[in-house]
Length: 191
Image (cartoon, rainbow, N blue to C red; front, side, top):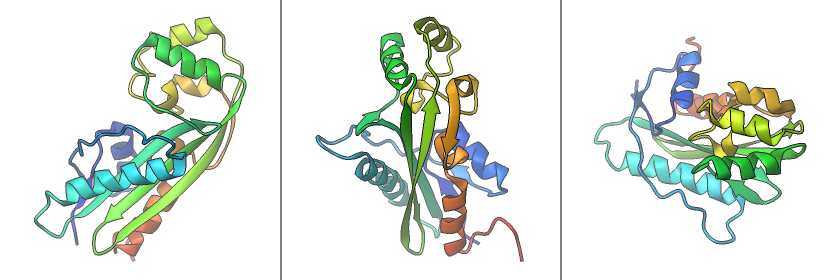
């Protein structure tokens, strides 16, 4: 059985793999995640997930399997990254307030073959006041989160509804991930 390496610093991705009983170790892929000019969200998340997997795979000398993912919050065709500061989070969450947006999550698995899956989920936000956004920022939760919110935390208070993958919105769509792992011979349930 090959060792699975998660090419991610995200504790949520590691927790999600643990939740489905997938043993793994973590090796962070340090890459430039700046979107290219005129790059659409689908191309962006796929490119970044593949770049993370490829970077870690190049450092592995055994038959390990590398799993990487990238998640972006998208409003219209605008990719919302991680906030740099309170004004940045305020701008993002104000833009999302009262609107529907998408969350794109790409998963790349590099083992015997190179595989990629894309998951797109839809999120409807209620109207959020500026004071709520400021208070939310001061909890520390929006820091390091695409779109400045975490569905699994206090950010869930802003969400009226979702259509798609809850785990995908968190950062690792488990349905698609399990499919890729099974293709590589790594199963959640043993026969």
